[in-house]
Length: 278
Image (cartoon, rainbow, N blue to C red):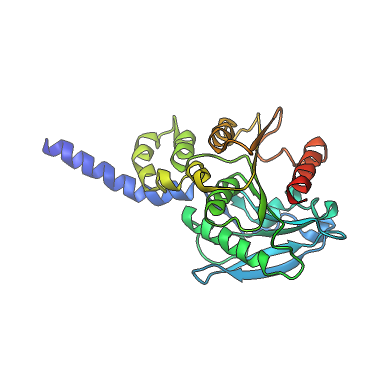
């Protein structure tokens, strides 16, 4: 019995040491420059704002070409920084949308260290900031979250959706613990990870739980060949959200690539956003 107790304590100890590792699996930030607005042929203003903890966050504001029909707040995925995600939204200004894209704490030029709860606070700070800009109609906003950004967008919208006419949730997951188990399943860390995931945000702070209090239309988008996050997660989210939400499952598309190239899906997204803010 004593040996079993020691083994149990040791397992818990290892799990606690790995707890930070489990959460860090959600974040792969860097400061490299992958693309620039200049190279992408779009205008951009460097902007900074602070989150509630006083960290300075950096972003780019991409003004619409001509009169803007709405403003898109973009929440990027878990890797690199905004320069890596710029090609995914750089086409929107030419279609009549302002875009604010920014880096969560610890990404790119933003201060701090990322955490799952922390990036939600950063998203709330970005939403508050974009409403203050003179060229932005704060009553005509679209939130566009991809991958981790989609999960983060749901939690943000559950707390503050003022002025948001549509949430576009692309390639997201429903549960922090669920996706962590999916990623570690079959690996050498699976037994310990099963214990360590207990330090992740609890079920009541999962993206899918946020749907209970979201009152804006949602559009869930997922590629059916997503090699990172299974499309069943978007099916689960859509099933809980119910009307007036929509679900677009796109054959042949990999992770976050539904809107990665020009074509019908970009046109459908523009039409959906225009209809939401009209």
